[in-house]
Amino acid sequence: MFKPINDNVVIKPIDAQDITHGGVIIPDTSQEATMQAEVIAHGPGAVLLDGKRHNMMVTVGDKVVYAKFGAKKLDFEGEEFMICKEADLLTIIKE
Image 1: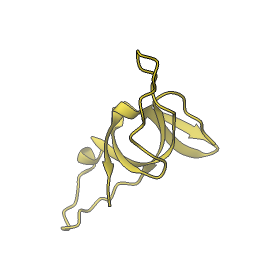
Image 2: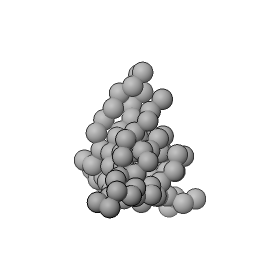
Image 3: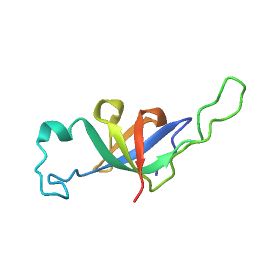
Image 4: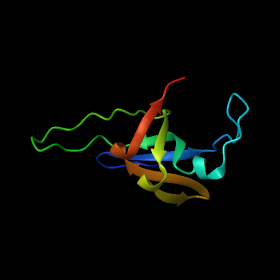
């Protein structure tokens, strides 16, 4: 489906939950600051100055948190994806 180049990552947004585990309702403005997504595809890594490639830290299937304004929207075959640099991802969510 996708074959990103260099250190680009294609992610699919995951709907944020409106209520925390403790039952607290999260206002919409708080949810917009960071978003969760699943990694769909990633490139081979950026080429460094010495000609070697930087190893990507994410793998397909990882759940990640990204900054809302760090990714570009990508509509493909009726589905919404986002594309960003690996550096724009904030964390990998371990379950």
